Amino acid sequence: MTHLRAIRDDITTLKVDAIVNAANETLLGGSGVDGAIHAAAGRGLHDECRELGGCEPGEAKMTGGYRLPATHVIHTVGPFWRGGGHGEDQVLADCYRHAIALAAGHGLRTVAFPCISTGTYGYPQDYAAEVAVAAVREAVEQHPSIEEVTFCCFSDYDLELYEALIAD
Image (cartoon, rainbow, N blue to C red; front, top):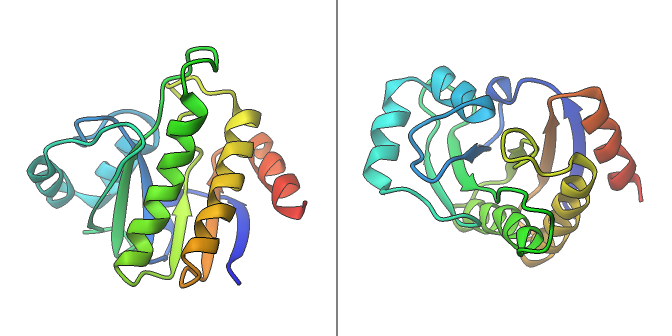
């Protein structure tokens, strides 16, 4: 059974098989967690991402971890929040599902996620947390080789949301 946990930490410091990057469609770096991951990983990550040709919202692509403690980075593009009536929840859930499937398909066992789409993309934190935890629970049922999923939160508020949802 997969262990789910929530922590408040810097995702770029986690020693896991893969950290997930809340990327933009170019995969070439940006603001927030995306910029922090690219900065910590170094130029090799940017160069490998350039070869991937971008990524559609809800999809996921994997690269090496370069200078990160994590051996891999799974890049996924979350949805922009447009009020909730434009399929945002499905795209956000797909980010988590596809990242878990990609990790499992490559024999990875431990994955850490940031709070996807809740920064610049404007997704409400509480709703995003509900979608994330439900999607991860569903995905690990399909991929039981994943031993641990970490929700790496930026704020105390996010941490409280995830801890409450995981406890349910």
